Image (cartoon, rainbow, N blue to C red; front, top):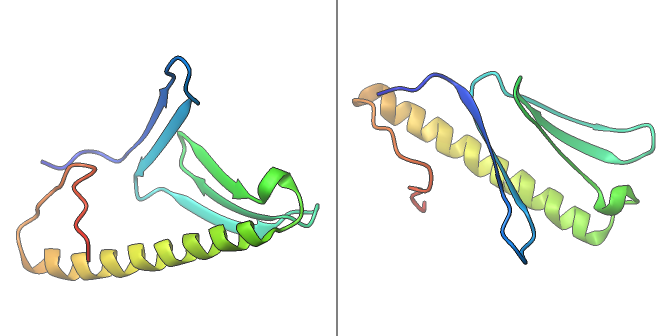
Length: 108
């Protein structure tokens, strides 16, 4: 069964805990952008028609060593996502479709 494209947003608020917001994009209509704002801050955006996620520097201030670390993690995760998509697209074009539930990740 194939679902229509969608964006899933959840909010979890538990007493005594920090609220948690989850955003899952399951749409080919995702827009990804990156630039440097007029204030001199780098900016990464992920947008669908239903939700927007943005990433920028700590406290909206100057780039820190931790910000560089986070940017490298994003870069490495995006490269892995691309490699996984390319590999799976090739495999799936040769075999019947199989859809996994979120959280069923397989380590490479």
